[in-house]
Length: 346
DNA sequence: AACAGGATCAACCGCCCATAG
DNA sequence: CCTATGGGCGGTTGATCCTGT
Image (cartoon, rainbow, N blue to C red; front, side, top):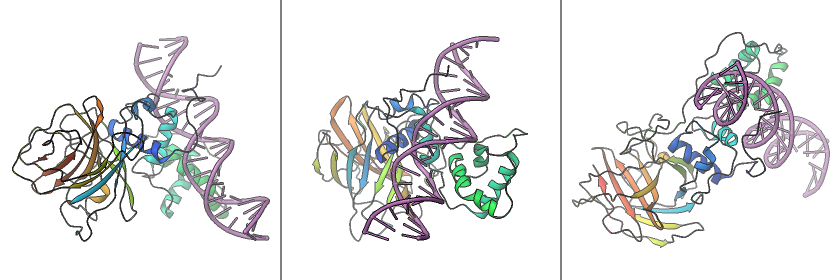
């Protein structure tokens, strides 16, 4: 008698993953890690709801070197209903993450050197794809396997050097896995560890985690990219910014839940304190920062949260981390939130 | 343009192994 | 030691895309 299946295959979704499912999984893994339990992950992912943001536009004529965006039009779209989770088998989630969603993955474009490594290892250890893939940074076992079966095998045979039958492994291999990629984030409270990869920027930031999320951003020019997230409430903020205005806010599904235009004015001397009990799932826009990005000197992210337990009270926020001195400019908006919640940190 | 066959690759299946209780 | 459980892995499938006729 075989072992029981890991999930009820009749009730979970199968087949190709939708962008929304990808986003849910990516967000959850980046913020919480896998928790060492893929089977339970689908129920956890999306349990608090996740949202995507699209940076729709920025002011025309604004130079790319401008330290922060004057206006942000953020469109918040609901990716999952709170508590619904991911209706996927845990193994399917693991496979999807490891083979497709991991940020350090390379697809296609195999080099001659990689071809040689694959052929050499196949000749020596056979179809132990996980071991072979571990020698090729950014490659997955599934990808290497497919590449061998569809291309490289023929290539090798065409060279009249058919690989000998695979032989069993004669030695021990140490399979090193890289943690989920991403970035180093800043949080005010230590979270249960997620993978803390190298940051692309802001080297002084602390590893984060707890409320790290990720999403996808599409600029007006059509560029699409992914971004991680952070939650960085801090009790000390000597400066303050305010939201200048917004348009068409709706707290009820269906998406878009809200479309906000932020105007982020220069910091003022007014101080403000973050109100306790605010739950935020903030999102970074890493592709827009660092050298080559529109915001070369820091981090920019937006967030969409809920106040306390009142699910009807929604909030949007955006933040840009200034380069020198290390500081943050925050802008937040909530059609029910008391004025003054917006702030900046230094 | 329509079709057939091949190529590609994401996803699934099922087994094995490690580990906790 | 035994059993249950979950992670890892290699083999396979099938939907989609590509290319040639």
